[in-house]
Length: 148
Image 1 (tube, rainbow, N blue to C red):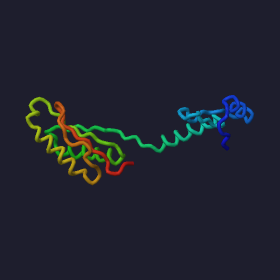
Image 2 (tube, one colour; image 1 turned 30 degrees about the vertical axis):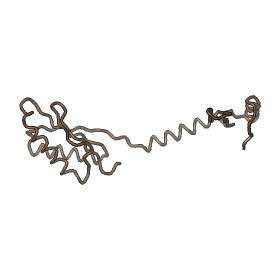
Image 3 (cartoon, helix red, strand yellow; image 1 turned 90 degrees about the vertical axis):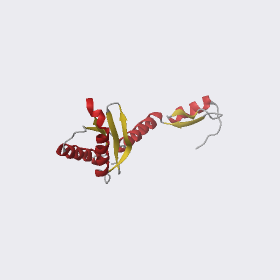
Image 4 (spheres, rainbow, N blue to C red; image 1 turned 180 degrees about the vertical axis):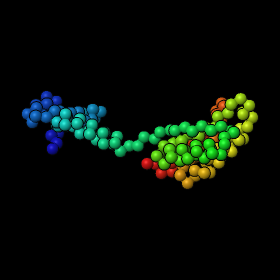
């Protein structure tokens, strides 16, 4: 029910008579818009809505798996299997190839490893961040195709 434009004092009296609070809804409007409501109940309902929204949101975690340019086949398969598990859980995976010492001369091996991984997981994940070199690391980020 709209009461129209009334003085603040009158609005406060009407709110108190009904057992409610006078709450300013739009302060930038001319004149300011106020509502007569139970403010405690309103705050409680808003916190409940925020809590429900927080329940429904999913947090994406970035997991990291490190490779070396001279990795053995079994170790490679083991780490790729873990990456697929992380992706199945709905997490992003950062695949890093770490170069030490003279291994920096074999950057092409690191690139081949990352390309091979991208090819093997293309049904479950997409390459979100293409392979990039940063210092002694080459990395890419994989994201799940269907978020959980």
